[in-house]
Amino acid sequence: SPDQTAQLSLLSLIIKGGYLMIPLGVMSILVVVVVVERYLALRTNRVLPKALLEGIANLNAVPGAMDPRRTYRLCQQYPSAAATVVQSMLLRIGRPQSEIQAVVNESLQREASRLHRGVRWLNLAAAVSPLMGLFGTVWGMIQAFFLTTQLEAGQNKADFLAEGIYVALVTTLAGLTIAIPAAIFAHYFEGKIQTQFHRIEELLFQLLPQVERYEGRMRVSAQTLWDDSVDGDSESADPAPRKSRRQNAPLES
Image (cartoon, rainbow, N blue to C red; front, side, top):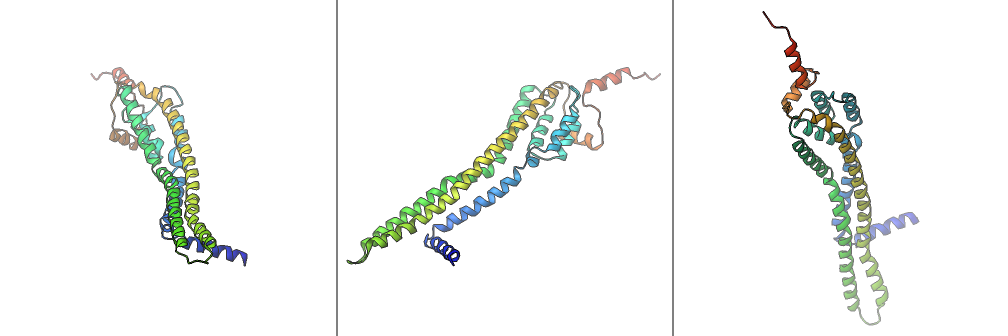
């Protein structure tokens, strides 16, 4: 049937493409694997969970009422890029604003680099695949012209050369078939990462003023925040109210 003929013709072209079709085939598998992996890794719930946003908004609905312990525990419940950055900020609470901003920027860059890790492979495939295909085409055409010169007089050199050229172009077609989807998905993922990190920066912009009020008033660590949260301590981390309660307590006789 015509469909079977087309399928066999495509298979024969792939076979005639030569050994260079092997690395191109490996590259195509790599692109498919990376696209699927990045699609799953860059889902919103993996980078900026909706439940985390809603929880932080509820905990910090009242200006000046931020509870670092409960916020840290919430980040532990929803591990993600956003949670990691917020935790890095909470672990520097009480320190100078410049130090907090430096740590937050470093954490943002680290998470962005981690999420871009697979996208770099797509950019590499988009750049290298056409060059590999072009290399195969040039090599195939050199062979075709060389073999044409070896034909005896009276043989149809035009038909022989035409067949050699169309076979040589198979690798270029394969390279473009890999590079075009790789470039499209790389652009899509980069845009998605940029959008999600803009939302994370907006979240940090909302939390930073509440963190600044603790400057010079308290020092915390991951163990302190986590132990308090496990024990169910939901009182405010602001040391000032606790000091006030101690001052107002009745003296023992």
